[in-house]
Length: 189
Image (cartoon, rainbow, N blue to C red):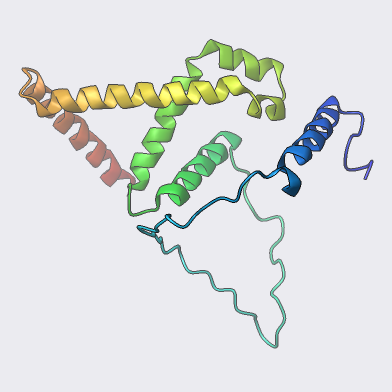
């Protein structure tokens, strides 16, 4: 085990002490009362059908091994991390709730908002990835960024649905931008 776990790590010692104390709190003898779930009622279940995966065996009960090893392409870690967040949000909300582009834009907006926080940038420079992932500052910054984005999007949507003086000029500018993007997309295909 000493080849796997660094026993000199102070975090491991703190975790050991915490777990020993936690064991005393959650031991069966420390339970004061049973939890009464008699009035709990299931009001709904949401089921998202994921993409079916073929797990059948090939041939006479043999699993198909790796083929063409080393033919994969190197992926940019930045985009892999963003795609991981998008996949987790798709798993959380399901494909029926939001379109993929909506989740992608939400995640990219959050990342851009978080990149404006110089304190977080400094933490990435002086900490390892593991240490940064454990930062309580990041969780607080994400919560604040989500609230800021929600306020901004709600304010923009509220203004758009009122008869504000600039709505028509925004729609004309949006139509121009969309037309150019669609034309570029047709050239690419």
